[in-house]
Image (cartoon, rainbow, N blue to C red; front, side, top):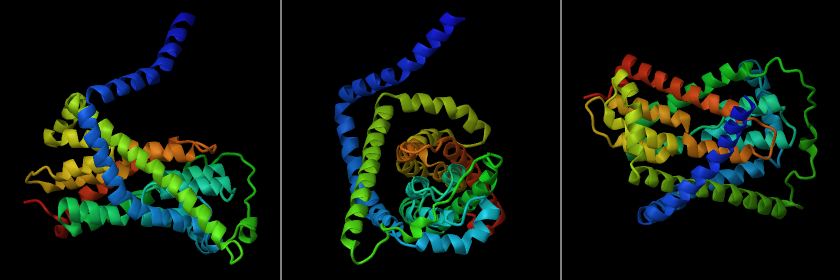
Amino acid sequence: MKKSNVYIFKLKQSIIPFILIMFTSFLLIFSKSNLSAAKTGLVLWVNSVVPTLFPFFVATELLSHTNFTYYLGRLLNKFMKPIFNVSGEGSFAFIMGIISGYPIGAKIAVNFRQNNICSKEECERLLSFTNNSGPLFIIGAVGVSMFGNSTIGFLLLITHLLAAITVGIIFRFWKSKANYFFVKNNSYTESKNNISLSNLGEIIGNSIYSSINTILLIGGFVVLFSVVISIFKTSQLLYILSNCIKPLFTLLNIPNEFCGGFISGILELTNGLNIITNIHVKKISINIILASFLLGLGGLSVLLQVWSVISKTDLSIKPYILGKFLQACISAFYTFIFLNCFPFFNFDL
């Protein structure tokens, strides 16, 4: 029995090095396609991610040095506490997470934990439902650019937000019986770090520096996963994984040509959505429902971004993973209901 446990332990230790060795080997073997994919990911980051996210990163950093979070918390505490079982300050993470998109919600939850504004359990509840796709991405990129229809974008945004709220209500019970002694830090309302004319330059500089670090981190993940998807395609791994989920798609009456795009979306959201929205079928509702699922899930790339953001805290990644899976399923279900119950949203030919 001891020998088998030792073998299992050694196998677990060897998995990650083995994956990294294989990844490095594929980088060399498929260097031509990987170089093209890396350039595409870099262009996507420069043209789409930086202009949309960087200003919001700076804005949230600056707002964290004001009393805005405190007063917003006092104003909305009577709603946040009974509905989501988090203090009113959590409304700032939820609102900015909706406006800005991934991974602002998670970054604010981490800031709350580091500044002792919310308890560990409250921050984990916030992680489960405040990290969402932004309206600019859903309506602009997915609705207008990919589907060519802003109404589809609005539908996806509505179901995405309804699913996030539903997940937040479900996760109000996360560790609700935990016995902890938590004293909220209320001194941040009068902190020396609050922005004023005397420290304006310093705080703006620190906010930009912190935002640059985060945006570079996201850029690294975008480029990395563009290369990973390229390797999956070139090595036929994507084809193999697509065949694995074909029975499930057949059972759900979903055409098999969606399998590859779905797997790509699980790896990296934007690439997967682009593939799925460009598959032409009579029932476009299938494209919309799958897009809704992927938007709720966020993909492995976003998961690793969030994991890297929370790595310096004592927060667990489990509520985020469970929350995003629940949000994906609920969002797809809500989208199905809207498409079938409201003729205005019926886009099928």
